[in-house]
Image 1 (cartoon, rainbow, N blue to C red):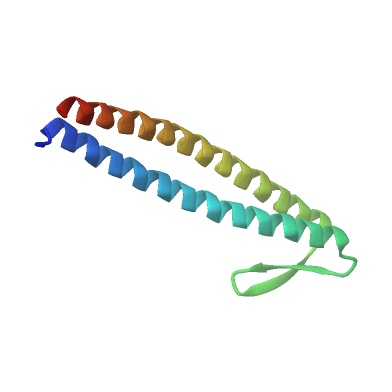
Image 2: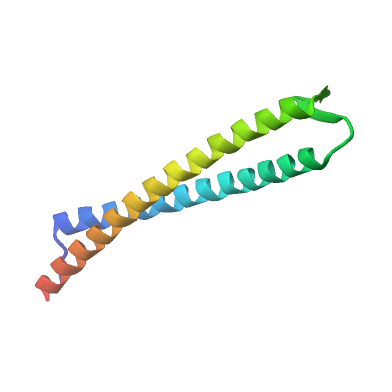
Length: 112
């Protein structure tokens, strides 16, 4: 069976979309890990009665519980937004992937 140029282009597009979905999935996992670490750090700050230090570059600086809590909460919000954005992109690409697969399958069926 000979594959048309249009079908070849759709197959290339399908592969590209699959790669994009994989990349987004890896990004989401990375941000999710960072979010988990941030939540863990927030819990540690809440339970801490001693001095709190944060690392800036290669220097450790003493800070207040309130200041570090504020920074961690802001970071948590930003990470949650990034994750949500990536999930939306993933959803869009997965839908596009399914449509493209369906289109390719239909064209292949017509060829038979």
